[in-house]
Image (cartoon, rainbow, N blue to C red; front, side, top):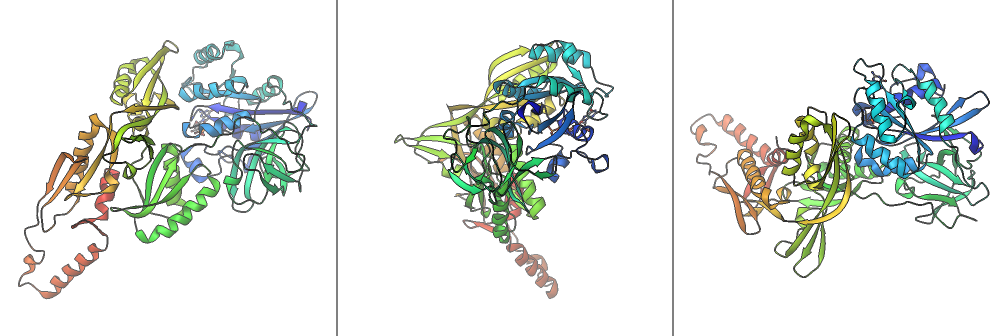
Length: 596
Ligand code: GTP
């Protein structure tokens, strides 16, 4: 296809504003998916994606669309909507010339509408503003058309009104894509350069790499090179998805399609990297490749220790399709053998643990998530701490923690409540802006650690679900942070150590000691449970000694009952962990960690 007949676009939207539904309708209207094969969210292939109604991995699909004169190839690149996957969003945007900015006509602009719009503008994309769900009785398209026009600097009449559900307005939208979005430009005679915007692992085909051709041409059987690693591979197959894969004789300037090289690991085909030919290839990579960095770390342990090998295998398998997942072995007194895992954010963590339990049938416990701390010691050395156990106790001069700039969009009535919440999470106000008469944007600088746990849940409940949140990394800042340890009869229980702000250390210590007192059964001796910062005890609870022998009740009683009781006790022992002299059922640790 000549570039003049290609249009590359993506749909950007806040979560739940209907991107997948609109994409489905486009597939149907352009005839690439027959009506009888249509199922909801055709492009979201992973079960979890479909169930949670979120898009995790982006996909590209080619659709034909005609105007009076000719047929165009529209390449739609689906983008993930969640903040954890911003890096993937920005790569997808870089593969397009235009973006449909989709806004729910009953909700209006939300935090991720803005975040994604800014990313699109940074990539110089032509924006087509669209209101969706106009079939909803609660839709208020006149009001939100104005809001949207004000935001991007256009006229309310130019805002399209569609329903992804009923299909109203979708044909007009396809026409607008052809008319308004510029055709791709590139140098057909230059050495080949293609940008990788996604790569997925497929059990049958190995790694499938999605690319946008910028210059030149790639053809099957040629040797290609990944420019960031200089690794060479044979190009076994090249083609377009429509939406099923259709092999082709080659891809040229502006085209979007897939490559298959027989590699088995997505790490060899990294999002953001440039593909060129091994012979006579390009010397300069396309701009903008960075490795996505994990922001949140957590220990993952099998509840049954004998599942450790299976857990390792499962992580190895997931890693094939998720290059941003990191893990290394770790051991814990309380939990045994497991892995320290790094994630892009909390949603990423949840998705991974859910996939581990669902796809691999593993019963797991995850420790409280931790961010990355940079600890400077008294000798001036810097230690990177992703696990409280790495904290250089007693040698700490200062601790820096990652910060994020957050943008919260909310109805004006909740401003006071939300400001209080942000302040309690050590936020400092950067700015406040009235977005319309009703809606306000609050911008806060906040420690990442304060938002990764339950901030979003609190924000939602305090605003009855009306607030939306977006955040981006904003460097590091030193803070008065301390490590709180939890001790059982003087022995540290590693899984409960946490790095917290000094003002919150007491609350954390009290919470954990109380929880453990309720969960750990009495022993033959008194067991103090303490929380400490270094050598200083900040909270204490005591489990009183067991007075009576278990068998005392059975004294003189019948012997079979006695035996049963002893057997039961033995059974229980199997799942006991020893912390010093104290026997603790593993369930107690698990319950204390999960806060049940
Ligand atoms: P993410 O993938 O998480 O970003 O969500 P999404 O933007 O793809 O939203 P999705 O298409 O899953 O739609 C969210 C919800 O809105 C679903 O319950 C849809 O059925 C509903 N929905 C989408 N489009 C329309 C529409 O035009 N009208 C109505 N009434 N409901 C819609």
